[in-house]
Amino acid sequence: MKKILIINGPNLNMLGIREPGIYGSATLKDVEESLKRLSAELGVEVDFFQSNYEGAIIDRIHQAFGECDGLVINPGAFTHYSYAIRDAIDSVKIPTVEIHISNVHAREEFRHHSVIAPIAVGQIMGFGIYGYQLALRGIVNHLQ
Ligand code: CA2
Image 1 (tube, rainbow, N blue to C red):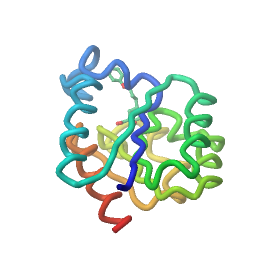
Image 2: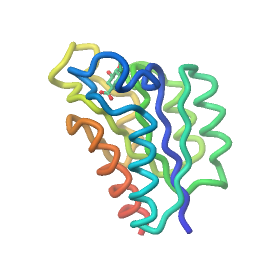
Image 3: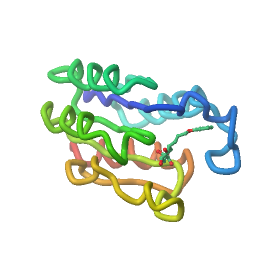
Image 4: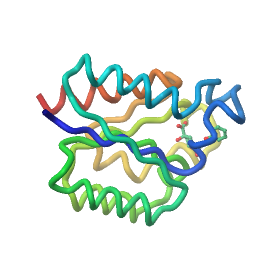
């Protein structure tokens, strides 16, 4: 069975708790439960990781080498400047979908650039937390 790792970066532990106008009212736990249900439908295994620390995210990506077949990541604000997370994904060569809850292009200019996008299979954004489902479907389809 294919195994997909779903990583959420900094501040995404606050989903559903603060700023519901931008990120909605569902919690990260709600998101993970819905992905768990979808994984059963798609016949894949999912594992979840959230951290507010760049190094912890990098360590988890390294740990996924030889263990996971695909990666779905919302790197949070690291999206825009973490060459270290980009290099980690590139080094393990695990096919990756980048997901954002909001449409980053409709927001501040600093959010318009992603350093992850060039090494990702694709990007999903602007569909709220439903984007996680699209991202999981996307990576599973890519791996098949
Ligand atoms: O739209 C996205 O998913 C983002 O990755 C979210 C990041 C932001 O820095 C990116 O530019 C776009 C921020 C995550 C903050 O999450 C919160 C959730 C609830 C309350 C406060 C913050």
